[in-house]
Length: 220
Image (cartoon, rainbow, N blue to C red):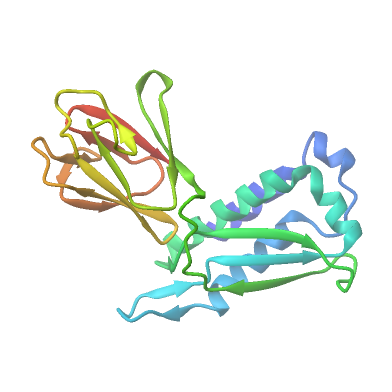
């Protein structure tokens, strides 16, 4: 069922406007199938016995196919990343670092074909933005970077929440695989995720967070 849903999402990329302009023999759904295959075949166990999969994938396409994919490349990469996360959650697979997918041209690849190179990459570029944000009320958004980030009332915090119920240094966001872990820093009013008080929580897309009485949503 998960794989069928992934295929359906990728097939939608070439419907409507794109269906008239998309001329490649290679279809987006084929990249999705190859990605899932690599997730499975390259998985291994970490030191804690948990199954982990590569977090960096390089797709090489023939130049003409790459040119055809160019108009939808941004949307395609987002769908492929969403597909990988969906499959990983369903199969209880983890990632060793932030998920990254690249699509490049390679004249050694035949038209209609693609090659995939998966790697385990634990390095973090702390100046780089993640693909996640915190969303607040009234359209407020807070960009998240690939580094430890402090949430609090103090003006030198990475995410500043000007509310008297928020401690000066209330909580911390820590990069964890392809998401973030939220940790209480000994605050007065604590943190809640999806209505439950907790000291630490690994976040997933759509989680509702309460920092004191401030409500935020984690979007990926």
